[in-house]
Image 1: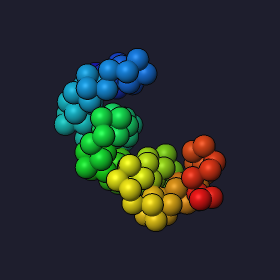
Image 2: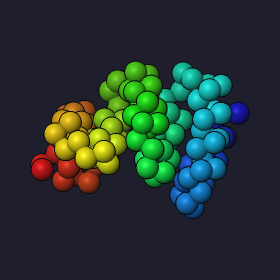
Image 3: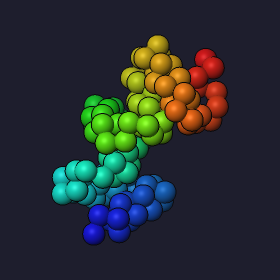
Image 4: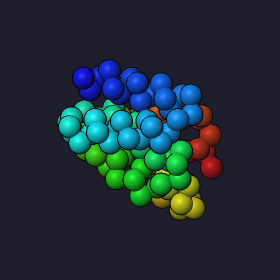
Length: 110
């Protein structure tokens, strides 16, 4: 089921198997597109694999499903940072902070 597969994928992320986690999460998001956590986890794998286009697309889906979750704004900031887009990244970090998600607490202060 979606929860089991999401948990499996996040475990794989923790042990460093981002490619395997991404494959599972792509299946989960294709079959259960109305759940935001798998979209967020897919974005994390994409970021780890340096695929920012994938990360941004997954984060847009997650944000549409859970607008008040600052974690997704924070992750978008990380994706934008990875692309070298500092000003939009700062805006995303500030948005995350305004929703109660501070990340490491340093990003929005830059």
